[in-house]
Structure formats: structure tokens, C-alpha cells
Image (tube, rainbow, N blue to C red):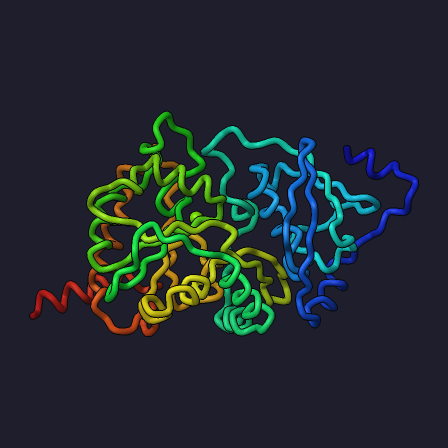
Length: 351
Ligand code: MG
């Protein structure tokens, strides 16, 4: 199919994503409507100019079920396969209601390749000033604001007054999505249900994964998380609630998606805020918009080998319960959670 596009007699436009992206940054984001044609069916997707090509692929994934890495996008006179996923849509000369043809097949295997991009990129080791630079940038604050108004969080269970909020990643945090098994429970992080039961006494729980809602629901159902009588999940969130940002590190510019908690805080301000929310994720970069609220959990990988020795969720239960009555989490340094737990235990012993 790519040959078909390149052998066309029309000139092929080279897209200088970086240069055009810089110009687009200065302009207000423009709404755009694109039509995606796949297997004879047409789907309309609405985007804004400062969404990236990668975000467009995620949106296409949402309407077709074809994972971004399986998509080949074809557009007249453009070599989209040569455009980086970080390119802003405003930098690509799409026409209004332009028709994109997509070639790709739906992933049949459930437990393979769900988490997008993170496997390709190393987790970025952010400098503190760099984090501040990203979270304070107007363009990302605007993006967050738009995401918070576009993405409606569907409550599975009501928010509870007086509870803190615990936001959990799935892949490598609660579940080893890369190993294969006959039964998904074999890939579940040990003590998951005990952990959720204990946390539920003090926290509302939301689960936020960088995959599509279909997979989030399926995985959580299969692990019995949505039907456990001992705790309730407040809401599930997927990749569409994420925003794309670019690391400011001049030596290594990288574009990546992150999970801005502001999407939640904006929708439930009477319950959750930066002082009472904590988020567990195995990827530090997911916290870049709210570094104070993130706790980097040791990834749970190779479940068959490491299942027996993994007690992270037990240890983290102690931490969560130890800090649960504090007024303000924003003063805590979650990177020192293991020693805080010890000090807490010491304090209790001396009481
Ligand atoms: Mg993960």
C-alpha cells in the first residue's frame, strides 16, 4: 500500500514537523475533523491542532480497535509513514474533513502489546527543574483543561466524602501484561485483592491505564476486581484521558504521554485534589504533570519467576494506611516511602 502512495505522480510533501510544530505552539489550537476509512467503513474523528499524530492514532484505535502500531495511514500526497508520531496535527497539511485510509488488523491476542510506546522508550529520568518546566508550561495547562472538559469520567460507584484518592496503573503495576498464561490470575500481582480491600477503607480507588477502555474493563473483570464484594472501584480511565507532552531536556527531546491528575480533580473538586491524591505507576514520566502525587512502584514483570517473592503490595498497603490520616499529602516525598513506613511503625511502637 505504501508503494501505491509513493508511485503517485503528485509531488510528495516533506513535513518538517519540528519547525512547523514550533510555529503551531504559538497559535490557539484549531479544531479539526478528519474522516478515517477502514474496511469500507468511514469514522469521523475530532482532534485539535496541537494533538499529535500519535494521539490521532490512539483515537483511531478507539473507533476501530486497531492498535496504533498496527496502523498504516494513507493520505493523498502525504507520506504519513515518514512523519514522526510526535508531529503536531497542525503541522500536517490535512484538509478539513480530509479522508485518511487506514490499513491494519485488530489485535487478537489480549495480553500482548497493550501498553503503547512505553516499551520503546526508557523511562525518562527527569531533573526536578525539567518537571517544573513541563507542568508549568501554558500549552500543557491548556491541553489539560481541554482534556478535563472532553473526557467524562464515568463513575462505577459514588465518590465518598472524607476518603482520599488512590489512582492505580495496571500494566506492570497490578498485572504482568507481557507474560503469557492460561489464566489471567497467574499474571496478577500477588495480594492484589487484599491490597485493594485494605486501601478501600481509607481511599476511593480509580484505575487508569494507557490502553483502551475495552482492555481496561476486560482485564479488571477477568481479575475479579470489578465484582469483589470487599471493595468497590470508583472509576476506570483509559488512554484517552492522557495528554502528550515533550521533555524539555535539550540533549534528549522526547515526546510522551502522561496521566495528568487534573483531569480527575477538575471533575470532582469537592472530593479530590492535590492534597489527598496518590498515584502508583511503574513509569515516572506518567506523573510529570503532578510529580508530588506520584509513587513509582517496582514493576511486576516475569510473573512466573517472581510471583512468590513479590510483596510490594503488602508493603504499600502499610504505607497507604500510615499516611491515610494526614491532612496534606503534597508535603510527602513518596520516593522515600519505604523508610517512611519504618518511621511510622517506630512511632506506633513508642506510643
Ligand atoms: Mg505500567
